[in-house]
Image (cartoon, rainbow, N blue to C red; front, side):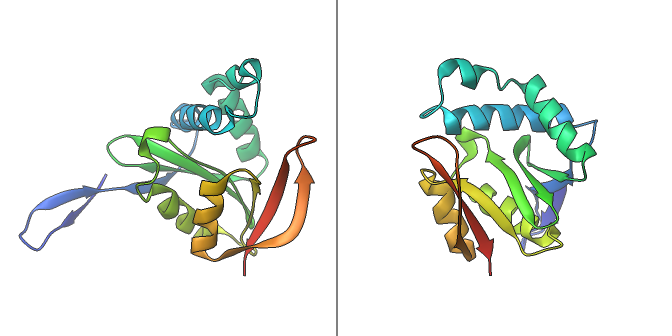
Length: 161
């Protein structure tokens, strides 16, 4: 953990962002699993949701890392969130449900932007209003590109311009 000294010489714990590797991959995968399930519950079948176990997400993240993606985890007293970066593409930004709306997503997103080697871009589901609000606040704008996920749901690309 990182600590900082306050004005009255007390030390307080602050969060840190660490690279994910084999030693902490299961922790990152568990965050990914829990958060993914919660964020997709409204429009995916229960059976499909339950296939996204920590073990499955560990293999998903391991494959991404083996193909050059950098994965990072936000840790305070415990792991709180994850994000991945591949050149300029930011993906897998997940914060544990009970830790959302506390600034952690912003912290991880800004860190991810700093890790990008190309123009930062990301894709969000069109129904993810909270994510869209966060990305717009940081300065991301729609590019006009879309991918159909289902007959009723599109994914929209945003870029930091």
